[in-house]
Length: 231
Image (tube, rainbow, N blue to C red; front, side, top):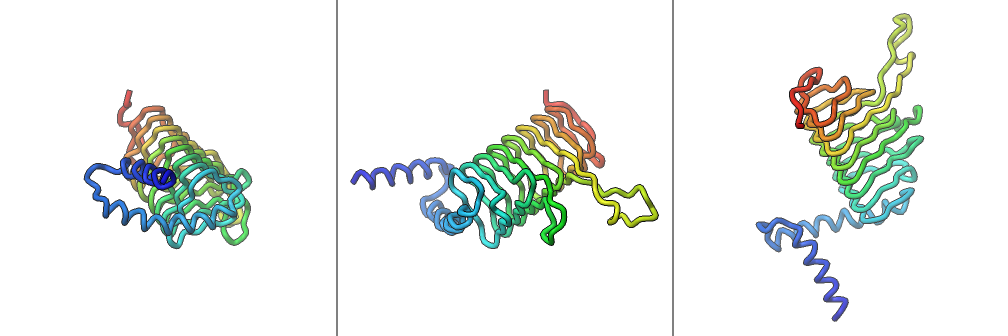
């Protein structure tokens, strides 16, 4: 009887976190779908460097070189996302991190090219559906960062100073990209190498961020410019 009481207490705790307009049938349907995520996660987490909580993995999701991946509680990889973990500094995710559908995290080419630096994602942060995180240079994303669909972040640039050589032969320059805590990166934003986005900033949809953003700024445009301060 005590175990049943404990189960129903946990169930009630989870149900109470749903908005009041959700019906029990809809909540149970959600649990049914997530059960498949849960069982995939049980298998995948066996290969992680570190995990300390639930891992949910969607249909068709790919986690490659998982021994370089460290995650906290409630790590979610949605349907058909790709997480390539082959890096010098690893892929490190905090608690309650979500990788959206069809998103790609790619520090290293899958065909055996030079190894990338890696990625760190803070607590309660998400990478939006169809986003591309090119962490060949190191990318750091802080806590409580919201990333909308189709955001692209690039931490390297191709060199092209010598016209007598092909651009491909000249290699790349890797740089650091940092998004500080409590930022909202709206849809279709592009963030280029070497940029730091200050704490509490909002990046408008469709922006191309080419230089540092001061904390608590609202920026937009191509290239992105400060529209106003939130302070």
